Image 1 (spheres, rainbow, N blue to C red):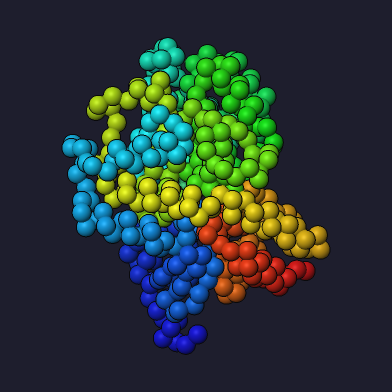
Image 2: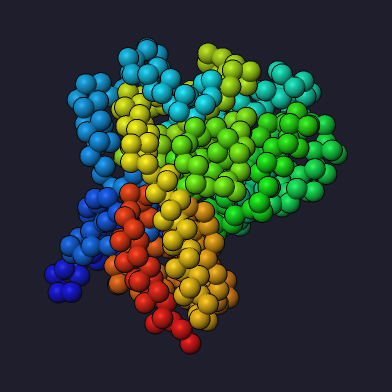
Length: 426
Ligand SMILES: *Cc1c(COP(=O)(O)O)cnc(C)c1O
């Protein structure tokens, strides 16, 4: 790397440090361009992207079909606000509702907004349909959840970094252990005022924790028994990431029959974001059937940008790409291969303890204490070796490449990862 080249990266980093709030701690790499599974830095070095913007870029960087849809719509009509109708929102709502097998969709922009929307729908439903006394509805959530960054959402986080000194916190949430059915059962039995159960089918941010087989189905059955809404946050796990269109694939209409063991759960409320736009634009959505969605009435909820024409065009194209390119099937097959190859390596490894995940949402656990910087240092070396990933929590590294990857590319990436890990073996 020459001195001028180095200074290009450093200039960009210095600018962010000086003029941007310090709410992130990025890996030191400055990206300039992306295409498919690759990104390039300002010095022209090429990398495999193994984070995919936290699974927003499932369809690959700058997918031509998505970019074209955005470009065409941007030239035609970008924003009307919902004060008026536009000629594409309804088409998108029909397309996405049928795609995921729900009656209706409520469009928002970011994942956190969609989670907030789901919580509001759930509370309204509690008072207006279930009949819980005013202001007494509780929503059950899981420990180590990640649902976004708003004041209400961080109120039920247990991550001190996300939460400390942002109080007072929003009331009405009960936290139970993830993947613990008896905790859920006890909570539902002991409290008549529970409106919903909000859960991630796999806890991505927490470190790609996959619950026990049958957990989601049984949790859904418990919710049904107690007339409680099962709310699936599939912002990260959805849109083919885990080898099905949805990780709770009861609604997914997916043609992939090659993935037995995937839970067939139909959430009452489904939350999507991230890859709903293929990473091209902030697009999120809440889907539900009429008896639930009807609690939303004119004026009761909204967003200036939610459901804007560009978002509608982009989301339709992004969902078409998932079907046309059979991304769920590809994620399923490559995920099996990835874990098989990583497990082969781990058998003889002391630095890497295990690999876990579904489809192409995976993580490895590094054999060191949670507050060590080993995982961070491994990510720096992965970067040097042409692959970008980042620790989630402490000693866990998430691997989530775009789903448009080929088998040959995946095997090349496994080599980069295992060769890098070898540098850290004791
Ligand atoms: C990323 C994420 C969110 C929040 O999405 P934003 O677009 O960052 O607001 C919510 N839930 C899950 C599971 C996520 O992974």
